[in-house]
Image (cartoon, rainbow, N blue to C red; front, side, top):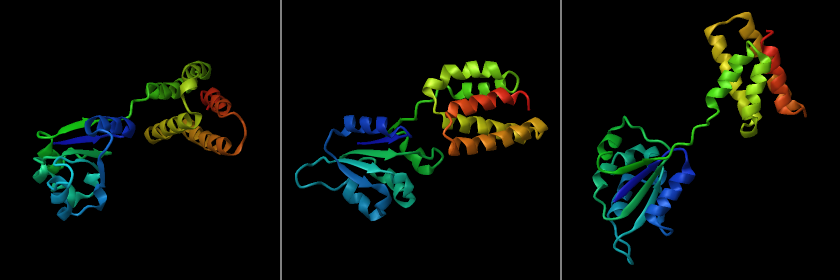
Length: 201
């Protein structure tokens, strides 16, 4: 039996694989395989056990081998395939999805993701209110990640409207980026200073 485990949350995926295969199993790197290897993996028996437990990692990165997978769905062995991402449009995916259990393990979404953009847009009108919003998420946010998100929002704003305010925001963010990388000031203080000034641009 084959099960596919996919997604960016590799820790959860590997925990699920351990539940499926147990602690002892063979590990095969999919990128190193050639089509001729597949019969021995999916159909070959070991000297000691009739049923083998095998983890194959990143098989889809090796297209010529991955395309052969539908031929081996009736394997007598217990096989887990670990993938970072699968192309759901591929013929191979369409061929296996109805016959093989596919478990997806995406990374949990950051609950503050939308709030970051709200803070930036609020700061364009009311810096003090934006700072109050920022205080609520600061304990769980990394300042450099937060800076990256507001910078991406500023770039998006500039691509939609290339006004004076948008240009000034990008210039100030460029200066802020340099300060964050070269000074010993607390990063949050520098970011808060930028948010307070944003409405005056």
